[in-house]
Image: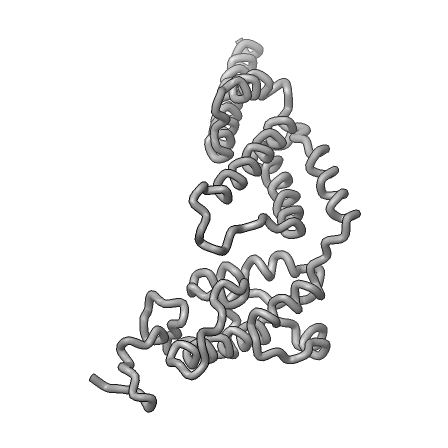
Length: 252
């Protein structure tokens, strides 16, 4: 079997293992925009950072920007591969930033983690007043005759904006055995479900809301949303039948 210049078995190098976060395909190059967006500044940082993290996660490389894949011991094949992948990610981050507005103001960094943190510090606005405004907007968000889909979309946008400013703590030590992260995420889901149900029009969904909230174990947001949209479809069908009956009665 072929060996590299360091005498290492090429087939065993992580950079050649398609399941490894170190893997790079022949199609990867530093000048490609892997997230399909360009960072313009504060105005689109949240959307851009989400798209970039998703793109890196799809390539199993998000650990290079969140610190969970640190550089291995130097003078090892893994360290050499880490440097290569890190340089590739720095190139991706540079390519996905606006050339005039941002790149001219950035200090070049050879660490993807430091580069990512610098962008976050510069463009992630998390001032207390903005957080308060979003919390108040969520509290006051109501359906007000909209379709359930439109109302949920409005509420989800507020949730996403708030979540972008208040990141959920995650255990990264891989030692937790009590599923604390899972429990915390469930508490957040319950809070969002309550907010969604609270904003529904009382005339159309008051009974369904009471039935859902009376359950000992609150269903997931997905199931609650499905139940509400099903109720909406049923009401629309009944309303359509009543309108047709009324028209026929007037025409008789």
